[in-house]
Every structure is written in structure tokens, then in C-alpha cells.
Length: 288
Length: 286
Image 1 (cartoon, each protein chain N blue to C red):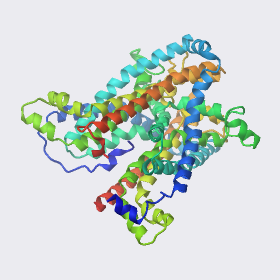
Image 2 (spheres, each protein chain N blue to C red; image 1 turned 120 degrees about the vertical axis):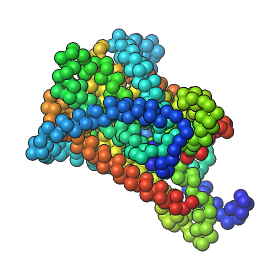
Image 3 (tube, chains in turn cyan, orange; image 1 turned 60 degrees about the vertical axis):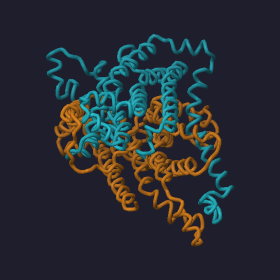
């Protein structure tokens, strides 16, 4: 077959000069638009050496922001994993009217600017909001406090796990689950022993993406957090506060933490894709 | 990865022996209602309170109009860049083999994984007067940071993956026979690309560009760092909504936010129509 193709000609764009030229151009642009921004974070953070970097990182307000960010991630990621499994199970294992609408609804937060999400949450829980007077009456503080940060982060990251699971579970079909149920397994047994093992890598990657986004969310959180330093600043907000204060080294030191999380997420993706390429049971090609 | 749902044909109602439908549907709907729908409804209610005449006055005020103009113009510039760069990047990743190809493929997702505030900080430093890019550009008299060009750069960075990740799978599935047939008939490479390859990629390309545009319109974190945020010149819509909130002008914040929401819905509709078209297109071919 290959011989027959070669007898006619190579494919479009395979002329050596064009191929080398286009690849070189793309690599050059990539170096400017992707590698340079990533590099400068670490170059600036370590500009004055490791001790200065550690000092800049170990400020009490930065450490507090890091703790808050970890707390928010610790709540949001498991909740959205649970939601992701429930939503993916609903739309892939059952057929019902309105299924497409449900999927569209799940994807909605992706299409909405985080600022709009923040403003919308303010109109629910803020003093002027729907529930504001009731909350004030019962002395419950949600806005400009940790609960609001968690809620806004849940909104922004709700689709991440679902969108990794649905294409895969759709492609895998229902036969295995139906067989398990016919053999007497309960719904939870089927989920735990049949469905989840089949999608564990996609689930893991969805969780990693969700985590990266939770830790890095800026727009929605900056509206609802009140941005009180040492109290309701998450890491991204802390970076902005430090930068506004001309504490550039401290800002970059804080940025390296989030950049490291992002790089870790990408490495995880890389490894998962490689593992999938080697495992015959879970092939994402089937989903593509 | 992007709006992948649109590509899956959803079959008609069929009874399932699998249990747990009510529980999982109930959980899903409750969560969506509390986390997603409640705030959106609150925003809609709040903006309905504003009243039509006041809404029009807020939206057509010179500062709001200027912010929409800045946002649309810079988002269009960013999308144009990503349309060209994204297509070239997808092409190189699918068609060619070279050392570091898998690394390049992994790098494409950096803008999705990197927090926007970090991206904004990095870009602002690169384009500052003494920065890696800013210093050479200053010699040519070009200012990017604290200018509309900076906003476009920030938007372009955060939306790099969209075109690549929508075009890539379609390009991979493209059958070589079509190109061969065109080549045997004597078509040049440019002609084959124009008449055979690009039309096949076009729906995915358009969907990716629309997603990139939508994302650029709503981008906030990266932009506020680099924009300088001067009213009438480098103030984007999302920032103006934020400023109105800080001024306790909730009516104006609601009006601006709901307008941005409406634009997002229109973009979502456009993407879905393109994908439905794409799906018909590919199903018809099989």
C-alpha cells in the first residue's frame, strides 16, 4: 500500500523545503508565545538566587494564601469528582428526553466569563442578593469569606471531570454494566467494579485539570472573596496584590507554585496518554 | 476536549436495565440547580430590576461602549492570530515527524493549565519597557504593555489551545485517498489544500475559532495585569463590570454582566450550530 502511495507522489505539504520551513516557523512562534512566558516566571523568581526566592515565598501572607488555596482545592476537587461521576453516569448509561440539554447545561460554566460568575454569586449571597437578607438575619457569612470562594470555584470547575468522562463512557457503551447487573450486581457495585476501573485514567486527568483550575481561578474569586490580605486571598489574588505593591520577586515566587501545579498537570496528562496508548482496554481512540 | 459533547450522536429513548437513574439524575440536577442555575437566575432577576430605559442608558454610555469596542477589537485580533497559528500548529503536529514533537503537543495545553494571573504576570514582564520583548519593540517605537496590543496578546495566549485541539482530530482522520485522487488529476498542493483539505477542516476550524473568540471576550485575569486599565482606551468589559461592583453600582454591574452573558450565549449557539453542521457533514460521509 505504502509503495503505491509513493509511486504517485508524497502528500500535500510534504515537499522538504515547505516541511522544514513550516515546522521551523511554528517552533519559533511557539518559543515566543509559550516557552518564553513559562520561562520568565522561573527566571524572575530565581533572579537573586535560591535563598532570596525562599524568603520571598515564605512570607506569612503568601503562606496563608497557599493554605487557603489548598483548602479550597481539597473541597472542590472531590465534590466535582462526585458530580462528574453522577452526571456522566446519568447521560451515558441512560437515554432520556432532554439529555442533550442536560449536557449543554453541564458545559455552561465553560462559556461564561468568570467575572460574570462572580457577579452572579454576589447577587445570590451578597447583601443586595436573593438570599442576602435571610443570611444576614441568621448571621451566616458566605460572601467575602471562604464559603463564597468555594462556591464560585465549584461553578467554574463543574464541567472538568464530566467532560473527560462522557466521551469515553459514551464510546464504551453499556454492555459491561448490563452484564454486571444481569449477573446480580447492585448499581453501586457495578459503578465501583465495572465502570470506574474502565475510566480511571480519564477520571484522574479530569481531577488534575479541575485541581489546576481551582487553584488558579482569579476572576470569579476576586469578585466574591473581598480580597482581604491574610484572610480571603487565594494564591492568584495574592500574586496580584504583591505585584500591585511592587513586590515583584515575591509575586514571581508565588507564581512559581501555581506554574509548578500547571506543569505537574501537563506531565500527568502526558503520562496518562502514554499509559492509554499501551493499554488495550482503555483506548481513547475509540472516543475520538 | 473542547465541546466534545456536540460530536456524539445521542440516541432515542431506550429502556436500560442499569439501576440508579433516579439517584444520579437527581444528584446531577440538584447540583446544577444550586451551583450553576441559581446564580445565573439571580443575575437575570437583578438585571430585570434595572428596567429597560436604565439598561439602555448604562449600555450606551460612552465608557461602556468604549469598553465593548476595545474588547471586541482585541478579541478579534487575538482570534485571528490563533486561527493562523493554531492551524499551522495542528498541521505540523499531525503531518510531520520531528524531534520534540510530543513535547510540543504537551506545550499546547499550557495556557489551559497555567492560571491566568500567572500568565498575565509573565506577559506583562516580557512586554515591559526593559523586558525580553518590550525592550526590542520599544526601539521600534512599539508599545504593547499598557496598550490595546497587550490586551490582544493576553487574550491570544489564553486561547491558544482551542483551534489546535478542534482541528487536530479532524486532520488526523482525513483520508489520504482524497488528496491522492486530486493529485492524480493534476491539482497542485495549493489547489488541493484549498479545494480538498481546508473545506474538510473548515467546520472544526470555525468552531475552534469561535470558542477562542468567546474565551477572549470573557478573559479577565491575564488582561488586567497587562492592560493598564485606562477608561476609554484599555478597559475591557469584564473589568468595567468589576469596577461598577466596587463602586456599589449594582445596577450597572448587573446590566454589563447580563450583556456579556447574552454575548456568551450567542457564541455558544454559534458553536453548537457549527458542530451540528459538522456532525451531519461527517455522518453523511461515512
